Amino acid sequence: MNMHTKVQGKHGEFAIEAKGLIKRFKSGKNYVEVLKGVNFDARHGDLTMVMGPSGSGKSTLIAALSGLLKPEAGRVDALDVDDMWKLSSGRLDKFRLDHCGFIFQGFNLFPSLSALQQVTTVLKFQGLTPDQARKRATLALEEVGLGHRLHQRPAALSGGEKQRVAIARALAKDPQILFADEPTSALDGENGQVVIKLLRRAATEHGAAVICVTHDPRLEAWADRVIHIEDGVIIDDQRRIPNPEAVLASH
Ligand SMILES: Nc1ncnc2c1ncn2[C@@H]1O[C@H](COP(=O)(O)OP(=O)(O)OP(=O)(O)O)[C@@H](O)[C@H]1O
Image 1 (tube, rainbow, N blue to C red):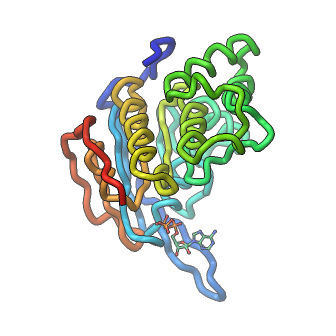
Image 2 (spheres, rainbow, N blue to C red; image 1 turned 90 degrees about the vertical axis):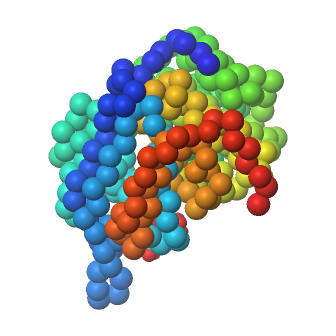
């Protein structure tokens, strides 16, 4: 693991705490309550997994926690920010850029950029010089095993490689909070294993608070904590001892 930067928050400290989150969507004439007063927290160094059936509110919860979707009620305290949703949208964007990493199922890569450029673009936004950005991006891509694919565009990469580029892009800035939404669902067992191990390492070695939404019960083996959500309510929250050497069987 590269040692160039470290998350400031200590292992075990809260990275994010949310209270009373309520989110409603309009459905015809009515409103559907998708988050029904959710309390949530996640700690540095933990891989916190959020599981639940389709439509239970997992993605909505991630969006409300990460400043992407404003809840109707409740508050989110993250790192040194009290009540994130009181920030202006510009400050909220800056907070996300500086401190949060995102990994989504669809990879969200730019078709015309090489693997290296996908990562350097974000780092340059953060204010690194082109030279610093290139060095840091190269390290991040090497860390996910793509040192030999730096100049390939997404069309030339496999699904697993694309997801690893997305992870390198998220990890290159050493996010203090890493949000992953179904990061392995488009991958086979072998590539899924690579990805979940990278998330595990982001927590253990970088000290990030990794919050991973998944349907996939096989990923529980790597988690420090498994939270179950059903119908907009957290119904279970268990700490467990992760097994970083677990093997992900194919579906
Ligand atoms: N923008 C929206 N407008 C209206 N309804 C929405 C919107 N986003 C989500 N919903 C509804 O909110 C509910 C919860 O959605 P959400 O995506 O949070 O669930 P999920 O647990 O992540 O599901 P999945 O595992 O299928 O991704 C669903 O019933 C969905 O249809």
